[in-house]
Image (cartoon, rainbow, N blue to C red; front, side, top):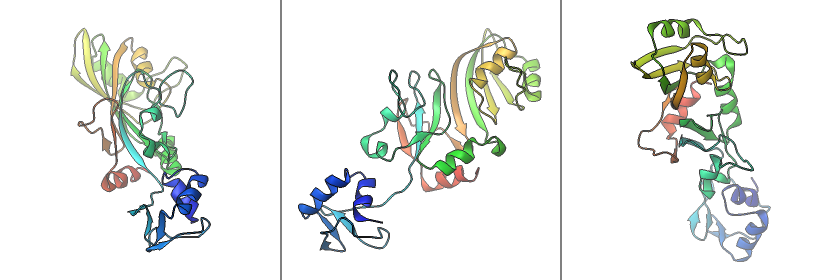
Length: 237
């Protein structure tokens, strides 16, 4: 990989900025000051430093965010704040994107990455990646609803959903439930409950695939996945 591409990819600015660093004699390769931005380097085998600090090359990033309500699952928007706006400059420079969508008013687990292959596999209908949601429902959720969801319900556009596993946590005028589904149609959880005559008033995603939302993350916070978590999420490819 070219030296300027490596440093640019790792957040040291544009290639023009990298040239300035070399003129300042701020970049070294194996202890030797670098003079040519087009020099090819192997960051896994060579010690590349900027101002004495080693450059650790990273191609992909994998972030778990506890998405807050009011923020949209997109990379950019003219009117609303996006989940990418919540990232610090180091993570943002990787040009990551959210894997799938959470509605603007929905909270919870959101995976953000720049690994397009992983994202495609997680979102592919053929993969049946499970997603678990917690919701508050206006109206009493019943055993009949559990059976209906288990069979799949017909949405307002005539689509028959795949079976969903519905668990009642609390039944009353305002019910609390958990729901596991394996597809991601537009507003699917809300529309599934509308199909049985009820309304979702609060929705939070708890997990995706083998990963659960880190309960230590406050709304709007995020962290990088650990190597073990990356392997877990890739097991659903």
